Amino acid sequence: MGVKVGVLALQGDVAEHIAAFREALAERPGSSVTAVRHAEDLTDLDALAIPGGESTTISRLIEKNGLYEPLAEFGGGVFATCAGMVLSADRVDDPRVRPLSLIPMHVARNAFGRQVDSRETMLEVAALTEPFRAVFIRAPVATDAGDGVEVLARIPEGIVAVRSGRHMAFAFHPELGGDLRLHRMFLEGLGV
Amino acid sequence: MKLEELRFGTELIKRGFASMQKGGVIMDVVNAEQAELAEEAGAVAVMALERVPADIRAAGGVARMADPQKIVEIIDAVSIPVMGKARIGHFVEAQILEALGVDMVDESEVLTPADEQFHIDKTGFSVPFVCGARNLGEALRRINEGAAMIRTKGEAGTGNVVEAVRHMRAIMGGIRGLSGLSSQELVDQAREIEAPAELLIECAQRGRLPVVNFSAGGIATPADAALMMQLGADGVFVGSGIFKSANPEETARAIVEAVNHYDDAKVIAEVSKGLGEAMKGLDVHLLREDEVLQTRGR
Image: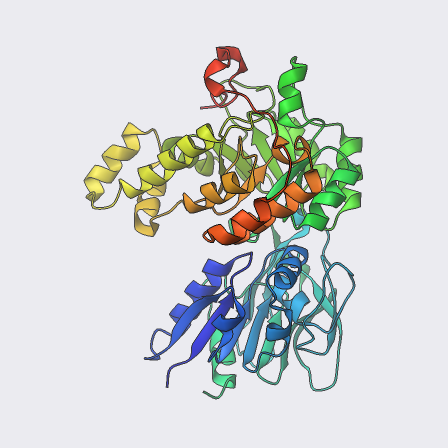
């Protein structure tokens, strides 16, 4: 059966998320990947990707577009990267961001410093047999994860990959770099 | 995690940083207060400057990198990325900006060029660069030198969008013109526009530039910003247009929303109401040859 994925398209690397999910779903007939800009775009979606970008900007646009409640009450699985991880948390270290409380965790923005401290590394991720080439760009980390949150990867700075029910969140960018193993793991976990 | 496995400043990191700015507005600011206002209004990044381009025009003389003290003040004031401008070819200004912790360097024609033959070799830096371009050949030459992001040059500090439109149409039209060309014709076209053939072929295959392409140089209103988005920009830089307007705070918010809803005229109409006077602006046809900024760099 096909999977219907939406990508929150307010700001950030939306096109990269759409391209990655289209590739991951290429062999699932009846699947679709669409941009979400209005509350009605969420109808019937099995999953929603919240992309990387500037979390302060995206948070402001969520409010402006009346999307806070519809997103916080979204019933499908959420695949969140970087700024998306910040937004999916229930606590954030910055009052300029109003998190959606989808995953019980505390997230710190820009945990690595300036852009020159952004990095690529081969990361050990639980449930993957081979390391994942993770690219961190002005990335956040989770500083604690609540009950029922499975920590999939951790580095000295903090937690960088989690799974909570059907939701997954990453401090790095699985949508960049062409490795779709985490997308496939997420899609399997949806149980569609 | 072993430290030797860490890699900094790769192409993926630099271009990825630029991708995170897409759909956003990058605003010129000259102090911490303006930077905070820009962040509050929803800017994805700020450009830290000594003066906005309109004031650089008015001041005359040699325009250089901003005072590092000023850049640090702006970095300390906001959580969004901070960019800084270096003169074309002035790799030491770029080294200084990188050392200060600037998140992206703009090798900019708005400042007085330091080298009339060579641009900065941007591949040697960990910090990503954005460069101006007027057409496809110029954009690809900059990407070949290591630029992670392109912005159309427009004519900065004029509040007149006509040159930004000309340059965006030239780049988008240049890419559309590649479709249907044979591989031999693509190589010939690359020679014609003085661009590396492999980058031109990549454009033909992808139907777009290999990096993010923003618009800049003359955007003064929410409608201007939406116009550039509809013409194919991935986002916009707004320089003098915000802090030279009658109401910077409202103008900044309105431009952010106009970029977000660039294809929805009702929203653009709503956010454009009662903003007061936009910056006065200049007729680019009346500029003397030495006052034109876009012809700096090649």
